[in-house]
Amino acid sequence: MNIREICKDAERIGISGHIRPDGDCVGSCLGLYLYLKKLFPKKEIKVFLEKPADIFSCIRGFDEIEILGEEVPQVPPFDVYFALDGRRDRLGGAEALYEGAKVKVNIDHHVSNEGGCGDYNHVEPDASSTSELVYDLVEDKLLDADIATALYIGIAHDTGVFRYSCTSPKTLQAAAKLISFGIDFPRLIEETFFEKTYVQNQIMGRALLESMLIMDGRCIVSYIDRKTMDFYQVTSKDLEGIVSQIKLTKGTECAVFMYEISTLEYKVSLRSTEKVDVAKVAEMFGGGGHVRAAGCTMNGTFHDVINNLTVHIEEQLEGAGA
Ligand code: 5GP
Ligand code: MN
Image (cartoon, rainbow, N blue to C red; front, side):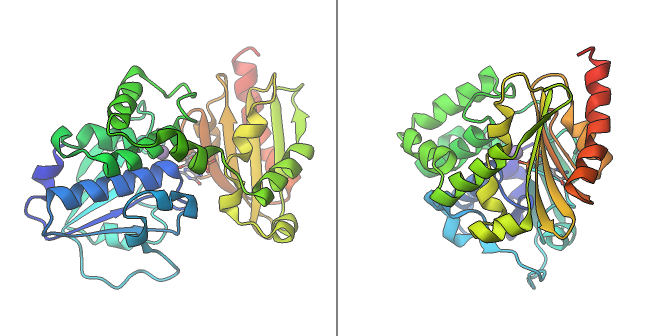
């Protein structure tokens, strides 16, 4: 895929990422945005995203993001539209902008997005992150510290700071090149990945305290209901990282964390170590993601949801001879 070629005749270019934007989503969108602005200073380039967490304000261009709300933005059609880090049906309110564009481009690393959904697709399920894929596509000579900051944050977040098995030699080579621009990477990671507010730590504490081991300790589950979220005055952005923390429990193969998004409706996050393909489990319930990290939305009580999920998790654990 050649971004310069695809965009050369376009006057208006749009970029969006998935709903509930995470570090990779924000990093890849802003990295591509900064790159396109440098490549084509005269073109109109816009990024539309659901409101990202404020921690990402350290990335240049953060204040220029057009925040998606309930209503589809009333703007003329785009000549080229990029859907990053997800499928065409999870663009957080920008779906119509993507569908209405003359040329659609999809850059993604989710297994559940096989083949891609654009006229041009760069979909690599083995890549650590969409930010790594954007890094592959940018011309070296145009890279700078601002683009490097965006892409480094994206890669670091989706690899759990270079710990997850999706981290490859290529990922580390990309990271090495990006830090060569002199970015303050220890601070960027501390402030966007590890640091938590007091209430974020408190609610994580609640989730840990109330977690339960099931399937002889091979699976750990926990949840936060609406009432608790209201009590601590937190939103979904404050719950980022809880599933990875409970997953650190020794002996577990699989972790499930869920929080109530409306009455008896839960956003479910799944993580696994090596035996369970959680993307497969999430897909059974209309979700998706990666083999080791996936999610979906499910209805019912906490126990209904856990019962429905564990049938499929257990089936895979039994199949793996665990
Ligand atoms: P998280 O658990 O952090 O929300 O998501 C883990 C991974 O699964 C991310 O890559 C995310 O994009 C993907 N994911 C989470 N929820 C859904 C969903 O409802 N549908 C799809 N297709 N992917 C999801
Ligand atoms: Mn990603």
